[in-house]
Length: 237
Image (cartoon, rainbow, N blue to C red; front, side, top):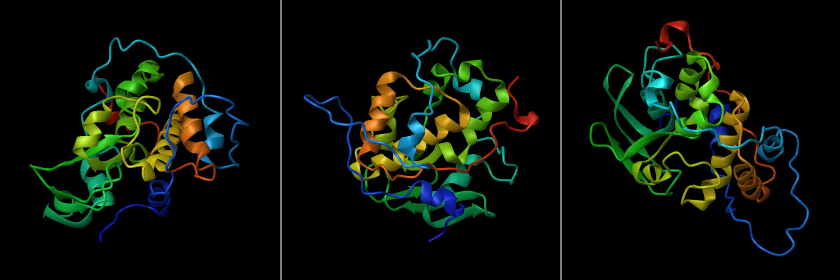
């Protein structure tokens, strides 16, 4: 097994066993769950709640070139995440270009998936989709902050291609991983990214986050990742 990640990031994306789901339900909901200090549930209440802004002006290019080496370690961001998240990693050139490995298991489906470069069923997902981020504050940012978000390990996860592509730019209110055991960690990751970058949430998104995390109130808020400003040489023109 090969891992390149700090203990904080490993813990951030650990499977928690939570099986909460979203929905409004009926009847008396009872008291709203309260998270402890440092929990993802408590952090939800620190997020700004606003309506979704228009998608006008969004393009992937507004977040810089894909997989820019913003941490300047000599490897592109995609390979950094593959090295961090895959087991049995083999390289095709040096120790950057990942040629093969195993996602065991895929956090979104719970299944084991083989990674082979060029014909892979593994994607690198942005926990907070870039389009969603654009509509919830990123349209106002300087280019360096958008590039940082797109390449921040805190916002990235190696996952199965099939469930990832069903997600689109969905937020917690509209999409959750089919693997119910991973939902608490997934939502906690979204909360952490939105808090770190100052992105807002819709009321429906906030309520969905609380419903999921209410089933795992001790789920910790992930921390770490890169700076919220990419080096100037990566800034989009």
